[in-house]
Image (cartoon, rainbow, N blue to C red):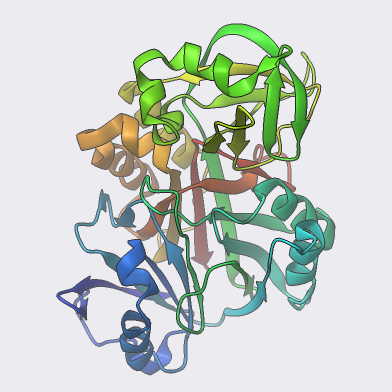
Amino acid sequence: MHTETLKFINGNWKIKTEGPSLSKDADIVFTFGEREEFKDPESYSKLRSLYPNAHIIGCSSSGNVLNDSVSDAPMVATAVSFDSGSVKISVEDFSDKDDLKELSHRIVSKLPKEGLKHIFILSDGLSMNGSFLAEGANEAADNNISITGGLAGDGTAFEETWVIADEAAKQNRVVAVGFYGETVSVESGCFAGWDEFGILRKITRSKNNIVYEIDGLPALELYKKYLGEYADELPGSGLRFPFSIKKDADSNPVIRTILAVDEETQSLVFAGDVPEGYLARLMKTDTDGLIDGAESAAKRIDKTNTKSALGLVISCVGRRLVLKQLTDEELESIADTLGENVQLVGFYSYGELAPFSDKLMSCQLHNQTMTLTVIYEG
């Protein structure tokens, strides 16, 4: 495997890696960027001119990861050329009338199964219910192909998210990438680093990803009481105080982040499902907890070899808000753990897709986690 990195500077792509360009040899290019630059067709067409034969996929972000830091460039990219492995992509557009679980089942089903080693999915981060996305994808993969990915970001604006899949960026789009080949192996790691606080409460009225009542009280009213001075900064401040939810006392919890609030209905809108009857508790963290969590995610990667490898990094925007100027330390801890041979590229997201643990194949929607996907070629 060979990789090269690029930054979008002053309206043009600049290759930052030394040596001959991959150009016509690249199999796939991953690109992530701030909304305005990312949705501009010109930024895509300039990248396409550099890699005429490659698949180009990516999404808008809440921060662009390149190497061991958040890049100051509005867009970044990493081109990948496999020695003998290959990739294929599947794309679907959707509207609010579509069955999102069925759509996610279809997008995975369109990928050829022979030789398939891993599936990586990127989706619009505002219009997609991430829980439906995970459920449909797992069913189509028969829960025996590993799946990771994430939901596109838009800083802390929560206004528009965009996805590139072999053409200029579009909203309401999902793309799945299949990695193929006997020499290809894929490892993933996912970890949070958040702590629960307050009493355990019950979701007493909800529908899909919208929560109307908690313990019989209006959800937004109750949430604002917890947030105090941060309540005036919703929905952005909700990224600092996610919910831990679980089916019952003995179930594994998952984290859910608020994407929007509705003052009229006093409801909270989450990135994924929060089923009625589930138990919920608020969460908080500090910088040390998040940095340690990122390192824990990296330690779950079983290093296949020391050859050049690709590391796809997806971390929740809420983590970046808490870390602030220490955000690079989260990424540095990953780079130090994985090693210099792993080229990192990725983004800060509105949701992450990954197995709950390294013992389970099926993926789930997570929020507030650091999720890593490392592609090796032996």
